[in-house]
Image 1: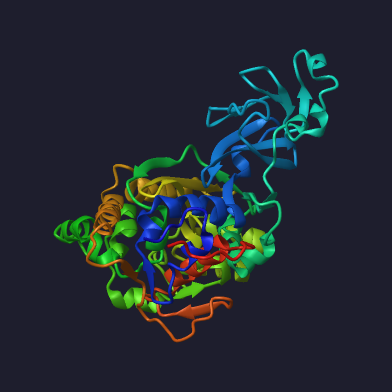
Image 2: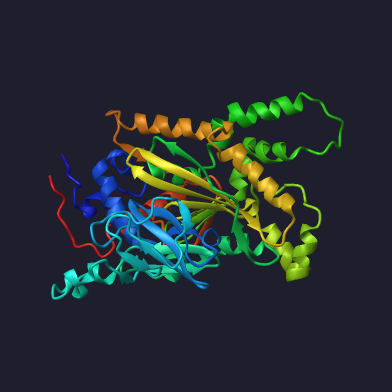
Length: 446
């Protein structure tokens, strides 16, 4: 029996060009290796700057299995710190969001730290005189993550002290984030309220893969979107009756295979990719009065039209987020265990745009991603069936072979048929890469 404990090279060998071993989804050793290597070596989304708008504002979350705090130290300076006291390891904050003022104070022994993590004060500090505390890691304060980047308001971090740069990791894939931000006449987004959040009893990678799986909507969502379309058609409304926003949102889920084949999939290096190269399920939403005019005033008519014509469907940023530019949404898939994942679905306001756009975004999020969503529960059932089914011993491999080509090169951008599983293969190629990033060669333990 193969042991993966402490052996990232053995884990990476579970990825083959046309298939991946079931252990990447169900094995707890693999999960621990992912947290230590994949999530440490790649650039992971933390939060948005609008969640910490004022000095002292903080937002507590996690990168992989590591608790972290996003905190605004100065007006233009956001830090990401490990959420632990350097003294006894106590979590510094337990509220999801708040304002800590000018410093953090540990609730256990009252060590205090500036909002950039530097040690500020220790009660009875004379007790450490002559002990060499100042030369230790603990004596320096709360530890910051390896690297932080604020890209147009989106905060990303790399846990590893050394590694791939932000620019190399994302490359041209940042064009999807650019399009989402550029849809604001002021080039600025703001998070609207807390996310919709709920637990999935499945592996986090199943959720990420599903974002570019275009062969499932018309099948898995027939019971929800299909029923809604059927009931709407039975109303037999007069010709020319405007379609309600709810139907504009849900009906495209029942588009035929040909629609999804034609919309295309683009992949970028390091596991990033998006559906909807030529069109998407968001292409035919009704125009919001005054919006195009506001964009035109900011960018000019030609540029405004180009921004709105780029209707990408789901953009996956490896390892664990998806954004929808046309509907201003971000979903983050937070791994808890091999078979447990928290899903958080955020929506954003386009600053300077009509409020009706935010209302449509909120409607989309409630209809598709809420714990009460009839559409989201179609997917949830499939994930949990897969998580259970992968324990069956009849077969050990999961197939990702659709439209496979010989000698696929994931180091270059590519555009393919919209039903290819290339993006899934791209993600696993990146998974294996960052699982072994700068890792020493190890023998597979038998």
